Length: 66
Image (tube, rainbow, N blue to C red; front, side, top):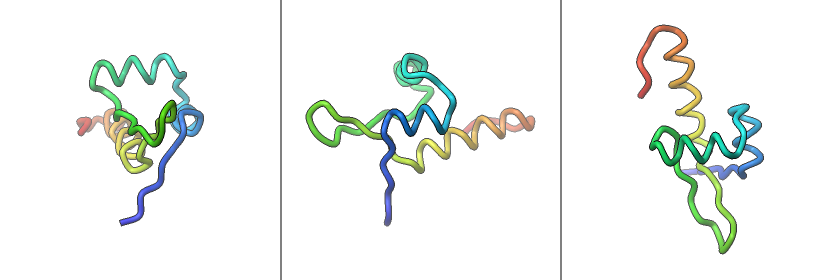
């Protein structure tokens, strides 16, 4: 299995959300949590962020979010 990690900057670019909104959604359990890759460094699994984006598209198109 190949997993790609995204930095906060990558996540901001992919979602168009700002840092504070991303962390607010994480606190609300409405966005994937980051993983700790080293002290002071976190990253997100690209597949989880992609799934979150796809769920937003489904909501727009009248479906339900996963």
